[in-house]
Length: 435
Image 1 (cartoon, one colour):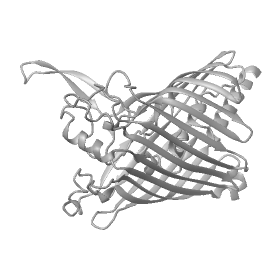
Image 2 (cartoon, one colour):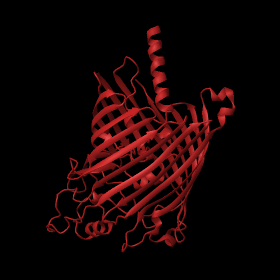
Image 3 (cartoon, one colour):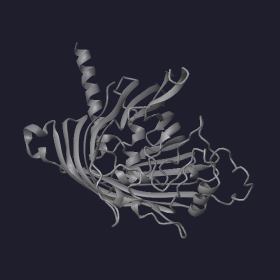
Image 4 (tube, rainbow, N blue to C red):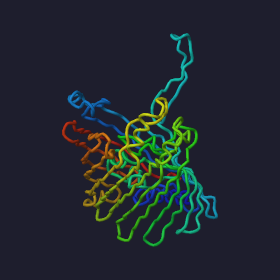
């Protein structure tokens, strides 16, 4: 009985440590082994209710006056449900996996249509995605040197490096980074990372992005995706991240990515175009700065991301005029630049009530962000609805360290001529390790 109690308390301690440490990079958090245990099982998830007080019509930006007085609409959602599985083989060899069900997963069923000559038909039952976000083998030579090979998280930007739901106050992931960058950004490659003194560093070599997946509303958001059974890797990219922890309670991070995205699809060359576009590289460069401060009962987080796509106008013309209509690519233009900035701050008011502060927390928070997913190159048509400001305020209540109840009011502001978009979101989230 005593052994069972000891094991239970160790597991609980590990679980608490993994969820309260907001500085744990997503790729590292998969491995949380209680001393003596080789297997780790954990995960996180979110259940959300939203009420949006604006039109959900797809033409609300191109015809804003027509949809100005549309009724509000509500949604229930399971944005993410994630299972971590990690294993320590010994001698420095470890395995990390992460399986994610987005928006409840996907569903397809066979049906027999008796009003259509009794034909069998395949029906899509529900939307969503099931993705393997991490699957890697790691060899550790010491705290300062680790090599990770496989499908890995790309820690470019605050959201990608720290995307678990207890690492931000809003109900949904921070909107700016989640719009312009892949989220969660995961790709296949090799990573060298380690910790030395007050620094954590990581260098990754990855399969490149696909320029034909870029678009106006999401910039490079869909760039790592592949509709094929394999990931096309005619081009490669490099990602870097450096975090500093010199000041107590403060983490500051720099991250970036560079790589060519043109000619990184199937087939390798555009049919019928010969070598006409061989010189178009579609170079993608992203630079970010972010920080997290957690001390004196305050949590403050902020980020600045800026990105560039070379040959944006040419790529946009190719996507619109040359690619087949049946091809699984976006035909909307991609902007030369994109930007996302944000800052949020929350204060734990239960810190002033000793009996409650022992376990529970209640943060009142506010958040502001500005982002634009389409800053056109010279000669490209403007689409000013992509430039947005967003304000949010609400609460995060932690009855225990692994669970939070979130509620917020947010307001998305546009330039004149468009309708602003207020909403209310409520969510329950968890994050922890069970073994």
